[in-house]
Length: 258
Image 1: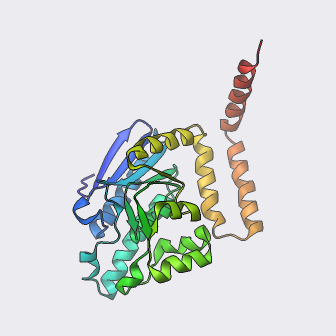
Image 2 (image 1 turned 45 degrees about the vertical axis):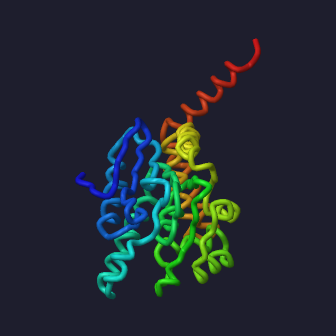
Image 3 (image 1 turned 90 degrees about the vertical axis):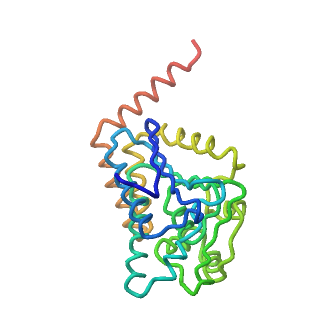
């Protein structure tokens, strides 16, 4: 891949994608959206991959939003092309078979917050601020902002989207926008610990669980339960559950006092 805006780092079963545009607070333009999708989809070809991490360069911003230089040039046609490119990048993250961790190293605004909520886990540095300021720029918040009512509740989503006011990291944690808040210096270690927790679980089971979580967002309760039944049947068609249960019994037996 010939990437200019995304840095890719492989560390065994963990791959980190860094959005590398610190001169514009890692804002997403069309090129960066294309590269982010390309980089995310390329990781699917790595059989050893267990966890994908997404972060921003520097300590000021995770993603400061959509690139304002790009936004001010948009007309109806180019605006739709741009926002679809962002959505396709975020959808590639949401549908990735491995768990995705957002390492929120700084401000996550607009498209940055939509990227955060597209990930499975979000760990934020304490100085980060998160919000959806689009209405202040004459634009509605769209695409993955549609996840917010289910994530934080309708009234808090209304507040975020209609005022454009940002939240500090601890308030974002309180309402469920991020999973953890840690001091800036401890963010890499916290991400590593979360990756290790995820990697203790069986890989195929995590993929099936992610698929179910995404489907549950759009299904009535009975259909959601039926989808879960079929997912369990798929898992039972492999050796993975039997091997994992056998390992559990062996570990339990070994830990008993003799």
